[in-house]
Image (cartoon, rainbow, N blue to C red; front, side, top):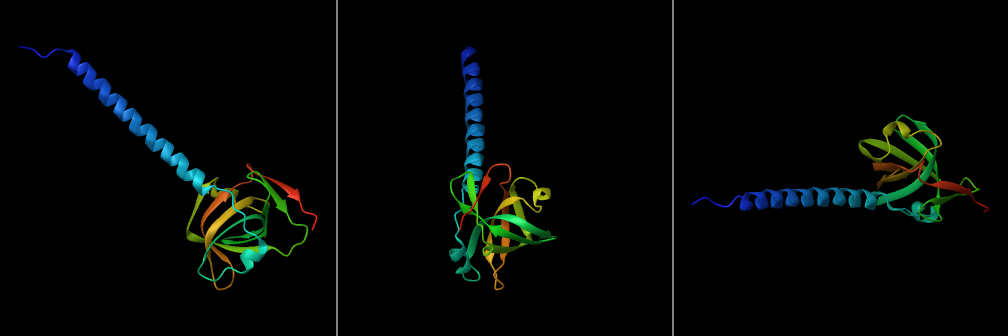
Length: 149
């Protein structure tokens, strides 16, 4: 006796729905991982100055000077997820070095230019420079306000 054709149709639809659910879960996971990496950072100048060499470090800066793999910028203070304060004094300078392992997790490497707003994630070295592991370009996503201090 022949098997009813309904079973093959149900099996095909079940496989299709299972694959669709798996692909959707994979896509959602990717978005959540990226969202976690782009979480707003709020590192103060005093906290940055007290970080010991070898410690993990994150900072949001406006790049003032870009020379090859060496970056110099002004530390920004978080006001909200989309607004950062540019201090009126120039005491919060951040030095960073792009390493061969540095990945750009948001934006493109060619967007690492003077005036760009970036989030640097890396390790503090003995010269008090951040050796970056990841860079996120925030230029199109955040705005600056001028500080009054």
